[in-house]
Amino acid sequence: MAEIPDKITIDVPRIISKLDHVRDSVVEFLKQHDISEASASRIELSVYEAVVNIVEHSSHYKKNDTIHVECMLHGDEVIITINHFGDKFDITKAELPDIEKHYKSGKMRGLGIYFIMTLMDKVEYSHEAMQNTLTMTKKV
Image (cartoon, rainbow, N blue to C red):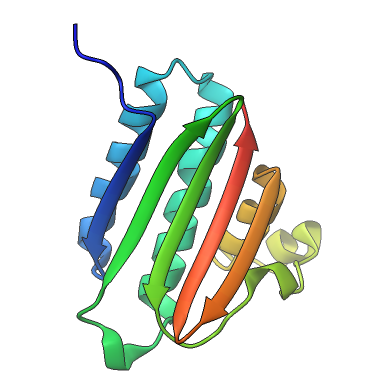
């Protein structure tokens, strides 16, 4: 029987239609490690929202660059690291919307950062030499 890896890496182009590959790979990794459905769903949504935001909002002059995603199981934590080239945008400093007002206003989009910041246990960001790194941690 083959050993289940404690880490996977995924490189994906900045194209919305290719992002399901990231989500499917992360979900499969979490299933292999018997991560609860509740935790897996939170991680899946957070990863997907992060990569969608990169594709939709990051620097257009590097559109051909890839997004690099690592998913690692470390003890009782799943750690997701997402790297991409582009302008600095620290989601940990973004103002989170009032969720009730957001929905009452009829908005159907714009909650990606809110989901990431509320579903994950720890979110860290760094930016160096035009390289953005988002690290999200979830206890499982």
